[in-house]
Amino acid sequence: MKQYPRAKVIGVLQSGSRILVEEFTGKHSKGVGAYYRPIGGSIEFGERSTDALLREFEEELQVTVEIKGYMGCMENIFAINEQIGHEIIQVYRVGFIEEKNYSKEKFEVLEGKHMSFANWVKIADFIVGDKILYPDSLINKLKGEKL
Image (cartoon, rainbow, N blue to C red; front, side):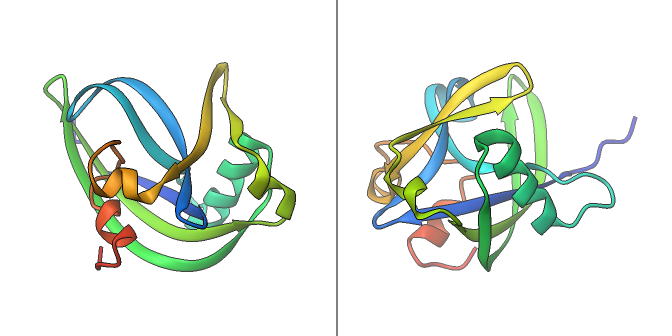
């Protein structure tokens, strides 16, 4: 069976020196424990990446965002439990339509029957390595480098 990279999209939503990220706990490519990822998900066949991103924020956080700009495309190849994952990720800068959402400290993230949380994390925590951000190369973009 042939395998192909998954087409994904993420939105970088920044407030001051923080970004909004979903928190996960478990096994990941750097070990076991907490790790973070911006809101986003898979792009469905026939769906534009921008439409997928708007849909993901609506489905997962029940909020409306607007796309502020295109940040680039990343290729993410990783291994967990000796299984290879391969993603092609479109990255956009986004902002809340409703200003009141910037003052919320935590958001419930609903994905089917699974619930987790998204919260604001200081970009510096990722840069110095206190917290783990995926995809890996996103940290370079947050530091002002090219993807």
